[in-house]
Image 1 (spheres, helix red, strand yellow):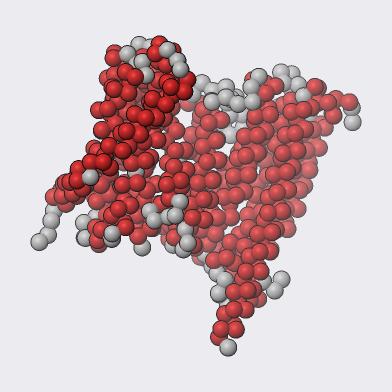
Image 2 (cartoon, one colour; image 1 turned 90 degrees about the vertical axis):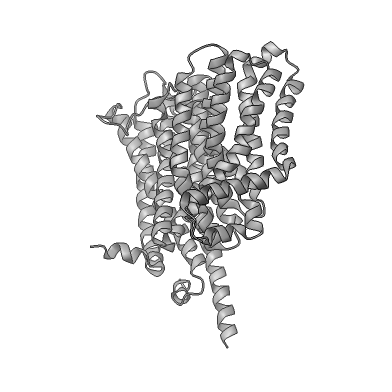
Length: 244
Length: 226
Length: 56
């Protein structure tokens, strides 16, 4: 039963799987994002409170959810790499960090643009916004720490530890709107009970979320190939692999 | 001769304290930095003492954070440089025990010193004496948490070329909840509102960090030492 | 496409830059990843060439 897990610990296997999956993930992502854009921008009715401005949700929310998801993936991969000494875990973490950081930047900027018409301000030191900013700093810290070491394995392990320590911020970002009086609205989808949005608005959002997830998967596959190559340069399988 | 765990613990603390007091200038530098940074704000803003009161908690805490960062250098670096850290790691006593002892000793000479000096700074910033107790309690809890966060960061960045900058990059994001609740506690104390919530939260953060950070800091040291 | 689509009920200067930034982030991810993989393959080829010439 665990053979698939053991196989994933093998760098050449992971390289092959990543190369094979990438085009499919990218294609499906394009479909999901395409549908999400058409339905979200064209078909969904305007919100009775926010008017057309609510359509920013279709990029802001998926970006924000992804920034948290990617950090969690990075932290889990780092934990696996640290505990079981599986180097592929470090490759996954290293590949994920820039992607997650870009999504965090997306969430912050689109959130800021959404905040101006809705709250009257581009920024507020509110728990959700502050903790998401801290998440971005953590991403930058992990990437900086990894590159600061001359020995790449040591850099990997140090960055992995920081990623695991920083994962405590992820539930803080998610629950910040529950625990504190926040300017930011509460959880609409990822909550106990039915989602609070009508279907015509919800389906495009779910599709964009799925599309962004698939997109992350595709880019992860690309970066993972590079990260595996960087860590396994001298291995014999590399010669055949890079011929493609 | 074999040494028991408690004995080893107190031996390490004793060693750290002896070394610190042998170079008193090293102890005073972060404190002087703390004093200087807090004086920069009133000079730069040229406010009346009564108006300073509003920004005093934030200024106090930011200065405490920055001077703690400054002092974190002495936690592992000098021992790592001359090889003592590796000897301690090989000594047969658990590395976690040694890390806990070093961090406690570090807090005694930096965090506790900051707490003792804080009334002077508070007076300069216009904080009323009625708020001192809460301020000192919150600073004590906060600097202890910071020492532990700093131990993790210091463990990860020993011997790196731009280690100081990286250390700040790692520790400051993790320390923002501290800043928020520490300043809130002092602020509430100044306006004579109930400080219980903020202080309890600070205490919770402190307990959480003191419980988990030793393992993280030990892991960090093992990564850098091996 | 109604006029409201482009003006977004008056919010156009917030909504369209949002989508622009989103597009830029997605595009950057693809472009940067492609460059990264290409660079990694070049480095790997170079390392293999050096290893095999050293072995000779």
